[in-house]
Length: 195
Picture 1 (cartoon, one colour):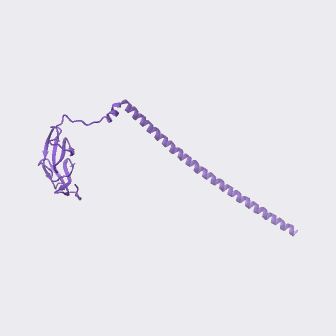
Picture 2 (picture 1 turned 90 degrees about the horizontal axis):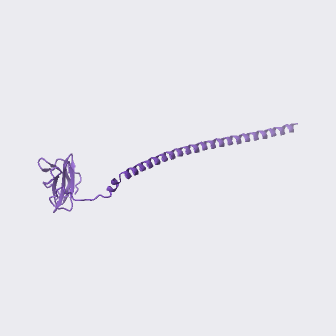
Picture 3 (picture 1 turned 180 degrees about the vertical axis):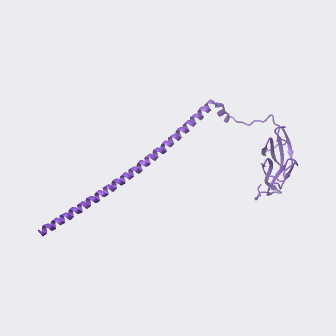
């Protein structure tokens, strides 16, 4: 009887161990299933995001296509505008008087209705101004330097940098229309000489 009782206990322990093993397998299967569901949800989210991006790209492409079609229709309706872009050419201005001197190079700047032209001749820089309203040239006093940059500041003609006795300078000269003279101290000089 004792031996039978012992065998029954051993069988019960084996059955309990099997049940625990089965429960562990069930937990593992459940965990794997939950993991697969999470992975599936992540993939579905990625697919949804990609579909959204693709829709946005398609919309952008459709808009660009519509814009191109509109531009093509506009250009087709006005072909002279397209052809004019490829028929540009230079021709003498018959209504404008010529420069007082011939030159191969010059600097040109416009302020209001007056065109200023710097003519480097014989290592000197002659300055002329052309009045559009009067259609005539007049000569300005020569700047204090040669090889300068030409510009305008607050509606006034200025020279920047240049050379004095073959030495680069950083001076900035401003032309005073009332006195018809170049003023040196109206604007601070550049920190680095340039010519």
